[in-house]
Length: 326
Image (cartoon, rainbow, N blue to C red; front, side, top):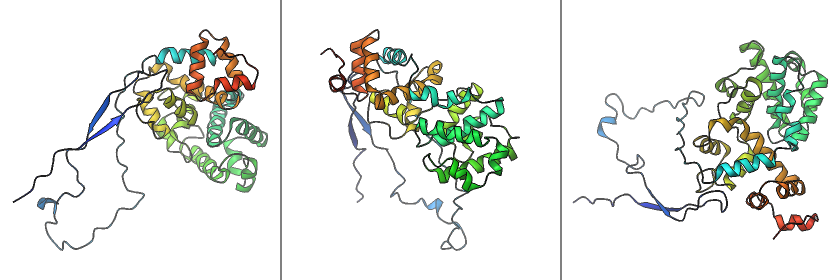
């Protein structure tokens, strides 16, 4: 007599949202386990070897030729309750454009280059250097490269050890020397010494990820095809409950998918600069940010926003002599 296994198990997941800027969720959501799984299932007779020696081992595919599993699209989310008023408040707090990224980020770098091709290449190199590197360090390194001669021909002619010395202050400089050289060679050989203007072509370049590619397309070609998410955008979006209200998204790409599923397209191009600047001020310029919050159109909401983003408003006010209403 055969035994039948019990039906699908249910996992109860308690969702959680921001206390100020997302709709509260007190209901338990039941998530059904998959109805069937290939793991542990008996192989179908039709799938067994049909002829020849069934014991002959099949050659394993080369790692380079192994196909990647298709990316699952994130389920569309509903816009979080009150997100627009929060977004407008952040826009007001960032209106002065005095964060470090505003003067030393890729958008600022783009305004100081020469021809369009030269500017695009310098923006791309700046983005490649920016990973795991503060904007202040990146800007100083870019100044060194410009003084050296930041053109494709000159970078290819520069010995690796000399280029490494020029960019030594940035994070993972050894790897970035290899990436910059390899990318520059591809630009010359395969893209007619120009920076490509598609997401696919940019992310195919060594050392260029989606975050960099999306900013490059926006800054260099005025093309908006996605929301660029770095650690600041990733952290703040989760703090505000903009990524689904449940468990925090695990990485910036998951955050990007969540934001793009509900955020209006017309704001995609400004989200990165807006939230990166806010994140920088939260981390390093709390007194300035606190004063801006007290002077804005809705101080109580602004102070709650800062609390959600990790600022201890009362502590910072007392520390810097700023009168914060209780």
